Length: 94
Image 1 (cartoon, rainbow, N blue to C red):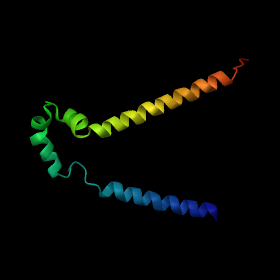
Image 2: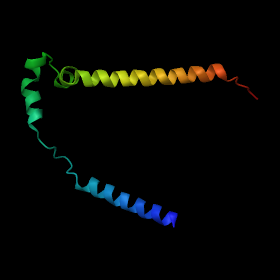
Image 3: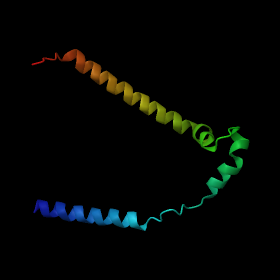
């Protein structure tokens, strides 16, 4: 019974994902007013010649700073875990 329910769930999920992938138009991006705003006003407001750089660092600066903090916190946490494991365990080689 459990395998039948799991199989039905898997088939329903696969059909939903396949339908979602097929229904998305390929090669035809949706135009937005925000794109036009960034392209026309980006250099004037930020002073950057590269529009991607101006969006990442000027318009989305706090978001980028938050992502960097999360990344550094994760790296710090993993390094602490590896150090604690190295100090606590004695490795025996055969």
